[in-house]
Length: 65
Image 1 (cartoon, rainbow, N blue to C red):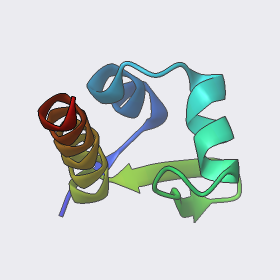
Image 2: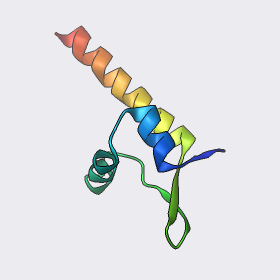
Image 3: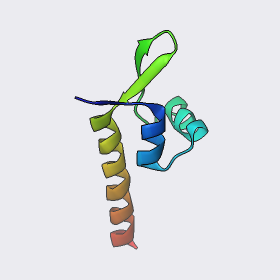
Image 4: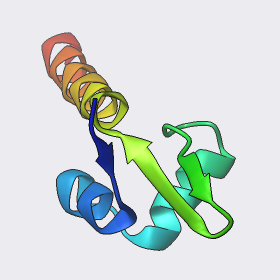
């Protein structure tokens, strides 16, 4: 299991920092794991699954249209 820092999450998803935290607040994005008082990271598999869901939603929308 690998943990990703915010910079890596932003690179993988193409999202800005503020958007990542906005989506977390809306329960539309994986929550980070606390690594200490001011240190968090995300589980890589959860980020990859989120990306896969977005791809699936895109493909289903294209098929429905």
